[in-house]
Length: 332
Image (cartoon, rainbow, N blue to C red; front, side, top):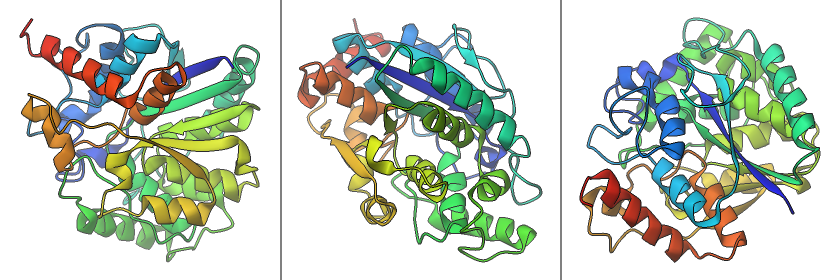
């Protein structure tokens, strides 16, 4: 089976709310994180910014896991700009430059139909060259937009966070402000999935949804709780979920502040869990993944899935991550 890895980049104004995202050293730097992640996959460092994307505490982007898996198994990567502040300085497919709005004040994605249709076209073309697509994402603030969509569709879901201190209280406050603007309660858009996406989503979710609808083969949604929102939208639109799977990391599944297992079961989608382990790493930045930092992103779980299919083990991926991090720290 020919597999193709897609990395969908997205931005939302939600990421600039102080305290809601740690997918960047500061709220303002979250605007650059998606393009920096994509550039790092092809180079030893990003091109748009002269530093690797890190959390405020300095933990490295999960792109290091995706890069490690790719260096082992050499799967092809196609970067897709779903909607970002900047274009990455690498070859990519352009869907839109639309950034998700702050849904507390206005609809998040008025252009949702355009984004979905363009992504569907891409999905149909990719079906001619691949039997399976593995779709990862880089979208700071995306767990909040995902939780808002899940709530609007009627799911009692809690999404994960790149921080061990999941800002669930802040997320819920922001979501409730958005619901008040629209005039709904939980489940208020249960039968209106595209309306839920338009009001509360982000361009990454819209792009992944369109790709999934356009591509007729097997689809691996490579991400954490954000991909639960995509799965819920697909189900609500009447898609048969038997050709879909979520690939994530054990750090997401084991997150006590989120409801990955429960929500996946409620939606009815199966999952692959990458059993990565950094507990014995000599680098604190990697060992801290075991303490709840970062967890997933940039398709880390899906990239590991592809490496495992190519004959490598999660231990091989973890070892390669250690090598990449050593190079990143300039210790070689």
